[in-house]
Length: 98
Image (cartoon, rainbow, N blue to C red):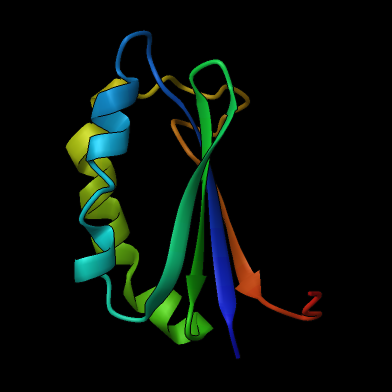
């Protein structure tokens, strides 16, 4: 069953391109990744939305996700509230709409 993960980020001033560039090769290296988009949600605020063939593929890709995050972690601001620099969620599709 298809799964998604969504991660929210806030980039430090003048580091947006570094953040975007760090994601340009993920499609070629993350097994089970169907599609991913980065959405700009505000000034220096982004979400990545990734579709996976199933939840197992998403879980198995976590080391790759962490490695990619580590490559630009210093470009991110703490989100506050004890979250750190990311706010990730993931789960299975329970209702598919158009």
